[in-house]
Image (cartoon, rainbow, N blue to C red; front, side, top):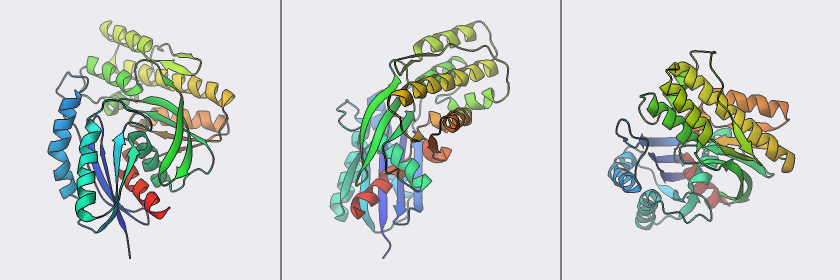
Length: 312
């Protein structure tokens, strides 16, 4: 008898739910990016909670009515992280209520694990040795040494990343300064692909940690000096690509691995994917990307985690 698993993820900027079956097929999936007013660079947690609470029931109603065997939810940003992020409480509360009423188990995952699992479901395999998970989004720039421990759970340690601005913050601050609507990644990518001419931005990486604050300030100065938006965009993604290559070079020298899984909204960018793919090919590292649709925030990872947890 076929089994079905529900995933729920209420992140900082997207409400998501999805159902997969026990053959990893997506039976239904729905998501909505939270509304951010024009000119704003983000949302307060209280606003996130309000929007998640309002939209999640409607999204769940869009899914097929099937008998569930388990529910997976994002309960926290990452394992062993007690950050105050009420946005995740919305999905967790809905999942817990559904679990009780439907008499099916609920499994807790981190938002980070949800991203990794979404990519691995899309790829169709789980590395059997420790690997790198490179996670770039609006709230995260992390290189995580990761090992799958079973039941959808990973043992992870953050070994590098950004020590100031996150990759997505860098992108969105530049985009908003150019007059684009938040989130700005897709429009900036479209602009960047229009030109090969740009003045490079500096890239700063020290001891395996990136600083995006200085490059962001330089980009904003260039905007003030009237540099063309396409050139600004090209320089932005070139800077992020250079920074990631320096980050990976440092850590591969200190903690070698043979596999890299790249996830997060920023990593849905085709320019950055090509840079990382070329770097990994030169360094004999297998690199896996989810398709862009499942690289950004979505709940298929938690659904896959619930399946794994129930099977194992």
